[in-house]
Structure formats: C-alpha cells, structure tokens
Image 1 (spheres, rainbow, N blue to C red):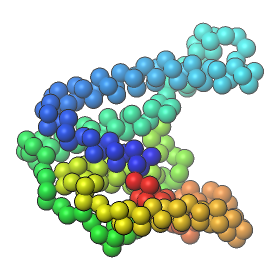
Image 2 (image 1 turned 30 degrees about the vertical axis):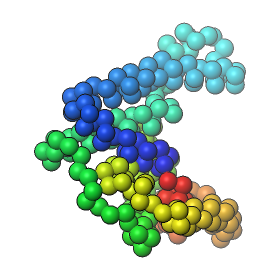
Image 3 (image 1 turned 135 degrees about the vertical axis):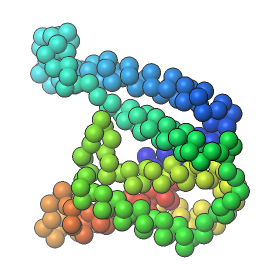
Image 4 (image 1 turned 60 degrees about the vertical axis):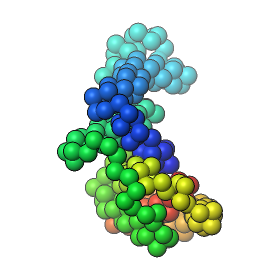
Length: 230
C-alpha cells in the first residue's frame, strides 16, 4: 500500500497548481468523496449481507437484514484508502495555504543516497513500532489502521518531493537495483522471521504491537520491503 500512497503523492502537486486550492478540493471530493459515500452507506451493507447470506446467517432477505443491523454494517471496506487520500489531499491543501505558496516548490532537495534512505527506513520503522504500542496492527477507526500510517504518511510526502525535485529522473539503475534486491531479501526473510518468532513461544499477536522484539522486527521489515517496492 505504501507504493500507492507514494504514487498518489507524486500526482498531487500538479493538479493543485493547475486548478488552485478550491477547484483541487472540489475535484477530490467529487472523484473520491462520492464513491466513498456510496460504498459506505450502500455497497458495504450489500457486501456484508452477501457474506452472511452465503454462510446461512441472513435467511430473511436483504431488507430485513439491513433494517435489523444497518448501523453495524456501514463502513469504508476497501475504500479506506480513498478516505485516507481525502485526508492527505486536504492536509496538503491546508499546508500549501499556510505556507503561502502559490506554486509547488521545486528543485531544492537532491535525491537521497543509500545512507539517508537507510536512515529514513529505520526512522519510520521505529516510529511504527512506537505507534503500535498504542495502536497495534488490526486496531482501526473507519477502516484506517493507524499502526501503518507511520509508513503511509512519509511515503505520501516522498511522492510529493519526488515530483517537485525530479527524483525519478535522477534515480540511477544501479541504486534502483540495490533496493529491489533489498526488498526481495526482506520478502524471503519474512517466513523465517515468523517461524523464529513463533518458535520462541511468542503469541502471533506479538508481531502486531507491544514491547516485543517481534513487533520491532516486523515494523522494520515492512519498511525495508516497502521502500524497495516503491
């Protein structure tokens, strides 16, 4: 998911500059807000009903099912990503207004080298570990798992900076290959980490958060693999 947030960040400054703040926000509300509202109030209840129906738990039909449990079956479902993008786009517009910047700031940040990238990966991994002490993996509000946002937010910002500073054009094939290999190594290492973590008698929940080495390793692992894929 971090890759999608980076892509979304990359394509945020251009439309803002072209349309201005008001039209940019109206466009985002139309493109993202309308589908989100339709899914939240209509399609998610239908999806829940179908799942319950196939399990034999909703024998009385859709209307009876919805009338009896509507408040508990509305939700964002997979469109939590859309809700997050609305929040990020609104925050971006607010920061542009506060900064008084009519145009995107460009060309002020050089492409980070491998050392800075490692520091970035470790930093957001540690931030995720700390956030998951309070909001473990699986804890959510409106479908947003806050334990993952220490990755999503920096990757969205990375996409914005990559656009304004031409990082994709400056990225060398050698550097890209190094991080692709790092991501592949992290992916291959994950099953071993899970087996090792469980083999030492830890609960599977130890990976989700809390003061467990498994939670720290998982937080760092997800950041390294995500960066390579991005």
